[in-house]
Image (cartoon, rainbow over all chains, first blue to last red):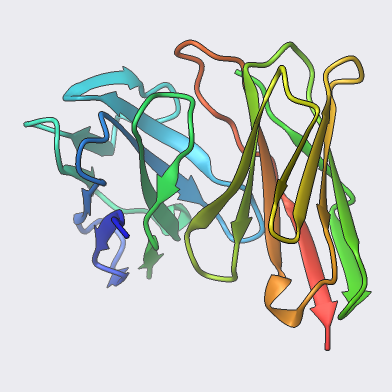
Amino acid sequence: EAEVAQSPRYKITEKSQAVAFWCDPISGHATLYWYRQILGQGPELLVQFQDESVVDDSQLPKDRFSAERLKGVDSTLKIQPAELGDSAMYLCASSLISGNTIYFGEGSWLTVV
Amino acid sequence: SQQGEEDPQALSIQEGENATMNCSYKTSINNLQWYRQNSGRGLVHLILIRSNEREKHSGRLRVTLDTSKKSSSLLITASRAADTASYFCVANQGGSEKLVFGKGMKLTVNP
């Protein structure tokens, strides 16, 4: 069964350092999402792509976070500089059509020390 | 965009019992989706029910939707320890509206 691939699975970084997460969605899925999930909370949408275009990044802290999906396939989420409050799980997900079933990756755990 | 609100926030039952989780939302929807998340893992889609459907089944799962009350329920029958997880409902208004997740409901099934 096709899956959303994410890496790395775990990342520990010092504050003020840069960190990047990679995601490969299910083949053919035009919509790609990056969510952030703090322990005990639900996932919060950071950015949503439709093909290579950003359709929603209203919750993305743009002073330190950036996301790209250059060829409309895989995507990278970058944080620079990382802060202690960025410690969370970063989930990538994709869907065939926006608003329909979302398929999630296993997530990337970030710990900022 | 709108957020589904799960109720109760936590539920603890014995294996073999049924578990019912409720979800409320505020405006009209295109569909409503339920997801499960095992501790430390990604979310897994369980079931999608469209606004013109009233009930849907998938294995031990039964979902109902009452658009007049703006509510949905997820019933897990004959629960197993492996059903221990957090459950989220997501109300989709349709169009380009983003899907917003609530805090979820933590289900614990004791063996």
